[in-house]
Amino acid sequence: MLAALALVAAVSGCGKETAATTSSGWPEKIIFAAVPAGEANSFQSHYGLFVRALSEEVGIKVETFQAADYAGVIEALISGTVDMAQLGAFSYALAVQNGAKIEPAGLLQHQKGDPPGYTILGIAPASANATGGIDYFRGKTVCFPDPASTSTLLPLFEFEKAGLKLDRDYKRLTVPAGNTIPRTVVKGDCQVGLVADAQLDNAVRTGDVTRDQLTSFWKMQAPHSPVVMRSKLPQDLRDKIRTATLKINAEYLAAKGWCTGDACLISSNRDYGYLPVEHSYYQVIWDACKAAKVEACGPIGK
Image (cartoon, rainbow, N blue to C red; front, side, top):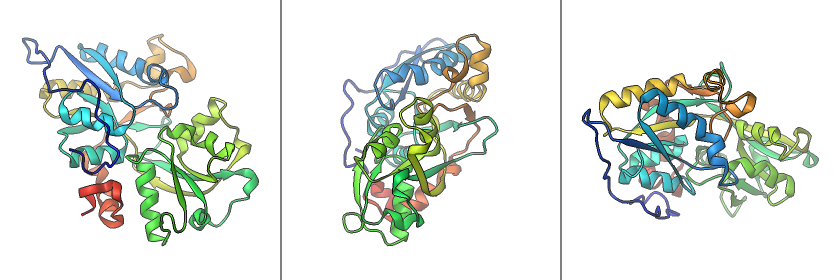
């Protein structure tokens, strides 16, 4: 399973779907999974309040499952071990391609009022005086995020179109915790990096880096990350989950008195909340895989 991911690791403790149900036909609980960014203990600060609010709004217990990477979350969705998950756009496409029966409940919105989507940035140390757009990646060691990340797939697609070949024109260093890539570039472990605009914002907010340490020399737009739910959940439960997801945001959490300021932001990228989204929004991922035929796409690219 998951032939599309060369680096799939088995999820410890994941077994077959065995959830008990109530008289309403709902499971007694649902399990929400995500991948922490940076230190493992960040999971609770990134998703704890969202999970608490979701449980209250839907009226069902919500437990959490912390995976090491997107491959682990995908495996858990396919096996039915988890019921909801925060994914990236690419990992959503991979999950669907490999048999996960899931549908999006919402689309992350970084700041209130932002349109759907986000920006992938090519970053370099400010001292490098980086110029030249995509050609500046040539001859460099490039920090990429998780192989199942949209911020990996779409730049690889653009590199292919520009004639940049792995190992011939650039070297690839994988840094699964994308939030740490700005710090990794500043340290010099790679000469340039690929990072979501929200991840760069978060690195500055937390003091990992300062704005004047880095420069952005290239950018492209990408579809933002969905929170998904298993399609096998009862329809009325899925309707309540979707309604709750779109209701929960930083203002909602602050109004509850549970947090203030940045502590009310959701996800590892510290986002405001969620927007409505349909499956068709992610067609660009399938299109990119078919065009680029990068290894991580597996059967999507054939």
